[in-house]
Image (cartoon, rainbow, N blue to C red; front, top):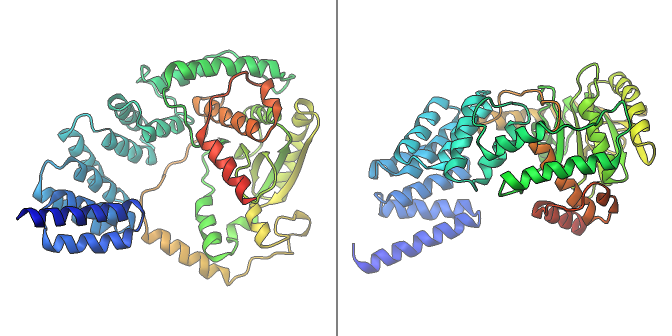
Length: 433
């Protein structure tokens, strides 16, 4: 191949890469296919073609591309890892594990393969194996952001027995060992929270280099999957409310300042509810949705919600005292904006499920069935008590409070760990409101 052809090919590959980075995947695929017709023995180009197919959710085509790359170069580590990703989406876990393992055997310090292998184990409830591989990913690349965040999420519901020298697990254990005199049966002062969070933040700074955490909601889960992602796909694509959501009720607590949100967190963490209802505390980041600090408790009937409200309200009145609103509503706010009156529990028949919507739901279910098989298959109950992820989210709450000029954040901390994630989210919300 002469130099001019080499340069032309390089320019075309660079153009393909540029289209890929711009997420113009269809254009990138057409160009890469044309290049492969001319030169079908360049591993990098074949691997790039596979990555483009992955982005287009053409999993089988991606596998073929990665296989061809490996036929050209049996030691192409990235192709083994990427083929593992493709097989994971196809639901062939054994082949995914085999390819991730080959990538690691070929390159002992390949953090991406460790993280992907860990994620597969994580999705299927093999948490010890997941921890081992997340830890290895971080051992070889301490700044592997995905592995760090995946491990932080995992230890919200799983207590690792080993790997105590890992900075994340070490920080989590130290946070859990802090004695904090907080009980929802007594008064919770801002001073106690201030002292406690200061100790937690010292642990964070000592152990963790990258303190960015892209989450703003603290959950207490009961192991049941609400399948909200599926329901929102139905709504977002067809503007219909899924049938399941007509029996989804929530006790919603709206608060006025961030100190109250901290106290609500402790209520949610410690309170005992008859059905161990899923609950969460969060800051409102969605554009167009009113409110700032909120808590939700998920219920299956109005009666269940009324009972939960009866149990929860006395603790809120005692610890938060005033400037809160507690109410029962149905489903998500977005649904009520599209169908006014849907969330009104005093008139549940105002918006009824249209049986014609069932066809739309079936289309989404078919789309999901034919799509990626990579998903979380095992759901566990959250561990009680404060964990590392909770503290990182609390710091995101404080960033939010400062940005919206809620000066009560000073009652909780004297030093905020800056969050670019929250800064950008608030900026976007302000621009779109």
